[in-house]
Image (cartoon, rainbow, N blue to C red; front, side, top):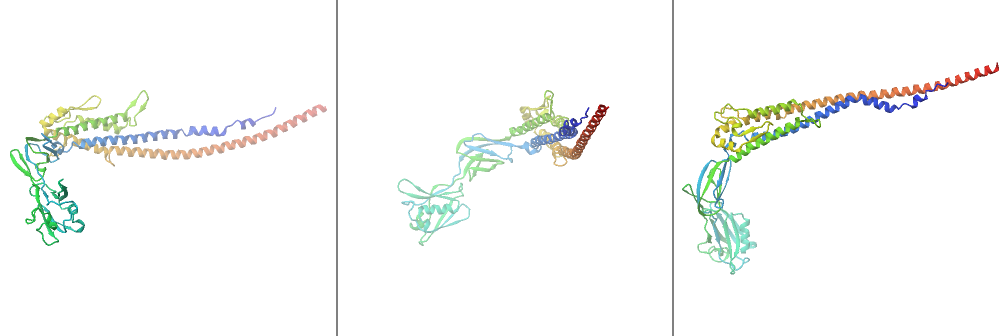
Length: 471
């Protein structure tokens, strides 16, 4: 019987065997890659958490300075008569205002001309508004018409607006309007005529309505605004008044016999809005933390920070501060609940705006002390929140940054470990290929030897048969 070993060679799928062996040996790499992906997800989640913390800190900062609680709003009883805008310097007060006269700018006109392009003359004009500096304007041959003179005045930026007006009856006038209202901001106008006579009706002096006096006709008198404020008569050169009520700009819109009340009071709506923003940003932060730490038993999906100690610490300490009392506040307002801020069993805050407004109106100093730092250096709740958040958000030493750096270091170690394993696996795969090549060579040699042996056995068998037949 022949001995066959050729089937051993043809039956081996060397590449498949090596592939399966290497797949088993690469399992540590797969586990490390999964671990690296988890760390990367945690770093991304830390970035999300930092964003939510930063948003919340913005709302906290808006409550930690005492100036915030001295915000006042000005309201006019009739915007048609007087409109008002307030600034940070506004102080509480009530003002009864009556407007008996509006400020207006002086207006002048020249003598009549037959056309806007009629030649007037050349020379020099001098204009002055009130106590402003005099402005000299050269009128040359290119500007000697009525329109040209108006253009030259407007280009000179003399504080006067010039125009040519046609009355519809064939008369054209040069008009001048002062750029400032008020009785002291009148226009001074004079000419130095090239014809040598500044007081006749020809040349530039022909603009005068009274050449001998050297004057133009006044069509509107410059006047001051006239008001009565809390029984006191007041005049101002402009209709927009900034120096009458501190921190309030008043704009006179019309004369009226009506007494308008301008009320400057604490802007409780703006302050309440800041606290409402605090509540909303806190709730948003808690929602972010809940999602990052959540686990869904149905899908078995876990948040990237589930079980993370830093995330648990942040959430726990922030909630504890909500329940904290400010012992240094002597009055009734020493906790969030006394201001209308409550936390439900799910950790969500709500605001009773009416309760907060009442506390603000009746216990303003206590409310300020609760949120801010007093003169003795005692820290209010907003200051405490801000310092806590600083500890989390500082770029180098903060809790979140330190956690991120720790995760990055872990990823670096994993990548170093995978690099070493990959190097070892490359060597292992190369050794396996050498071993299988050696096996193939050995089996090939064995096959050759087996064939030779079979031939020899066949020859011996034939020889024995011949000997037996000869006997």
